[in-house]
Amino acid sequence: MQRRVRKWALTASAALLTATGATAAALPSAEATPATVDGATVYQPIDGFGISEHFGRAAIMNGSQGLSAQHQREILDLLFNRTTGAGLSILRLGIDSGIQPTDPGGPNATPKYTWDGYDKGQVWLAQQAKAYGVNRFYADAWTAPGYMKTNGTDANGGTLCGLAGASCASGDWRRAYADFLVQYAKFYGQEGIGVTDLGFTNEPDWTATYDSMRLTPAQAAEFTKVLGPVAAANGYKLACCDSFGWTQQKAYTSAIEADPVARGYVTTHTGHNYASAVDSPLPTSKRTWMSEWSPNGTTWNENWDDGSGYDGFTVATAVNDALTKGNVSGYVYWYGASTGATRGLIQMDGDNYHVSKRLWALANYSRFIRPGAVRIGATTGDANLRLSAFRNPDGTVAVVALNASTTATPVSFSLRNTGITTGTATPYLTDGTHGTARQPAAAVSSGTLNTTVPARSLVTYTIRKQ
Image (cartoon, rainbow, N blue to C red):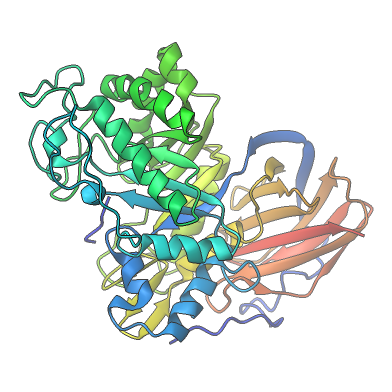
């Protein structure tokens, strides 16, 4: 959903924390909160974390509104660099009618595709992301071309002609639309970008004044059976259905799961966080992604914790909930960088840009929880301490602690079944004065990590075996 809605110097040196005087690696007191990380308790696999730059934002990043090459590179580093930035690993591409904007003469006519190799900057951005190591590209359509729909235009909803309840004088466009989507992905292949995941609808339960298309859960399941074989034959995974709310997505997932043919074609179930937040898993054993969200807000906001509802703490809470309540394998924020009163992670402003703490809220997860990781058990009796833990493919364990308390919280982590009894834990802190800033390492001894999580902060501990 398209929302209406100082240059950054990364602090990497260890520093004193908040007014509590504690550091993220400080030894706790005798009253430390006990917490357990248990590698024998296994939850969902992790595909990664990402963003989109649809609706021309990629072109702005590429300099269409005066952003210099130097600042362009700095923004790319902030988003994709695994050492100094967020280390994002998924890029969501927006498909519009651009590759075939006019009716070729009916659904059975030879398609008249056009391709400019740029796609409003998205090809360039995908190539840049690939250079950083990104290899998960999710191409998703907001709508079929207008001439394929009941309302004859890209905007304002309408339904794909040929689906049950959507007959049109122009005929049945279902297979033509499937071919259209696959051709889009093939064009990216020509540019060296391997689209991995393909979606045919975005917010099918929301009528927008811009690109949009309505589909019921039954119609989504129906079209899955048309696109599924075509996508599979060309090596693309099918994703559905990007409902505008997580609760609303459950109806789409249920409809697909109830159809054995449709169920076999969908690899990933995707939902958004606007109309309803992630509060429980979707009704499927397949992988699920929270595939688009940014918080509501009317002004640009760079703050960590101001109670606005669109600060960094809000985003950190949403990511934590999606991972621990929804068991999502992927988390795709909306805009990485945009303009004006954006709730994106970065605001582009001519040849200037500004960084929100929302970026670092996401980076504390995305930089350290890598594709191929698996979420493992992380529990505590302290309701203010929101924990998640992950075993990465390289054997490291990432423990993320979001402290909602107004006071620092000493914690004693017991590391069970992780293979790490002796080692080091390096904390990375985000709060009002730090942005994923490395802190002094703490020792792991006899399978125990003693530490203190500062008040109203987000700390990721990367734990390595000695």
